[in-house]
Image (tube, rainbow, N blue to C red; front, side, top):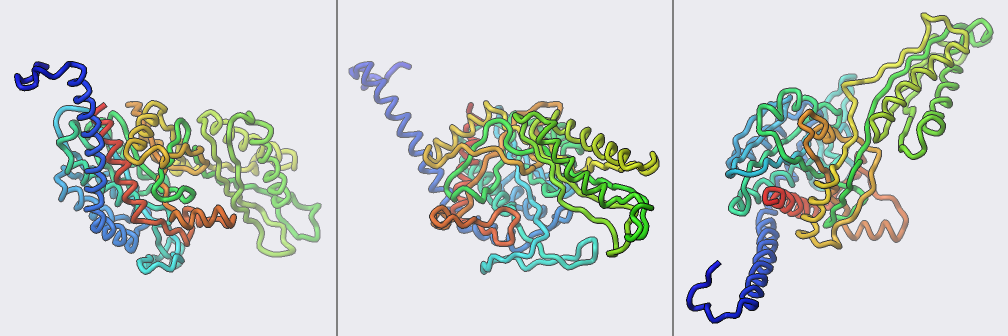
Length: 448
């Protein structure tokens, strides 16, 4: 670049130095402006959070929550499609030629009676499918997710002169039951709208202090399967067991045998879990029933391990039934709930590295931790398993009040976990951090 005449006498080395200083100052000022801009938005974001927290809706019932997300995005200037894949919302903002970046937030609550004692606690109740009155609570932080989502959208629109491309905001229903991502993808999320070049999301973490973020590269969350096993037998009087084939005894043998799948069948280098969470059979002390029902949850990372677990369960249950003398017509029934199956979330390493670098730039390296993978499930992983093979990354957003976090470390007392009736994140600091982290990450992905 040719210098104006009045700068002609400046040595080339000095001009380069001045250019570098100017670039550094501009970057520093930009980060400062983003934080200041987020702080100005915090009062209304806190109001949005408390509204969402006090008005949770269960999976597949998120009508009002969905409408609020659509309203917020519409007011920001997005082209909004609502009721997509159920109560899903898709907002598109085109800002010139460039990458397509998708940001996702989940919107459903949980059937939990809140016991946080907070002034803004949810008092919402509903009647479940068994006609029981149950509470509803955002016990998994989806209210934080939505508020950070709207906050990041607002900042990206405010700073649209700093990036080019298409911003795709997706408010997804029914995450807690593993159905929302499937429904939105099935309805054409990646064909009826621009196909993203990357998909990012965040999730509150109940083991990281607010103000910090956790990043995982590679497998971050697990494959999840719900499996029902019906073990059959020949019932009779408890005083005459020799005239029966007792399904309770067969079930007991089965429960123990299933534990050999992770301990003896799957490689010890492949993390996996087989948990029997429920066992029901019989009606009275002296009656041997005709069947026992088991409910299992399976967890793994590797898709091949998932298939190995299911095949082993079918083989083991049948083998024990045969050894008990049951005829073919009384073989156990193994039912895998395909509608509840969730694949593992694989944070594409290159994208995860970019996300980490962006957040470190915005928050400082001391506020970014390398988090371990967990065996919880999240249907966010589905966005990276379509034919488009889109790179995805979900990062953890610390939610624990820093003083409470330190007190827990000092005392050894466990903190309330996600899905706990007492989970209450430090929402002002958590939201501020989430908006800054998500906004900076998206901007950098647009400008890469």
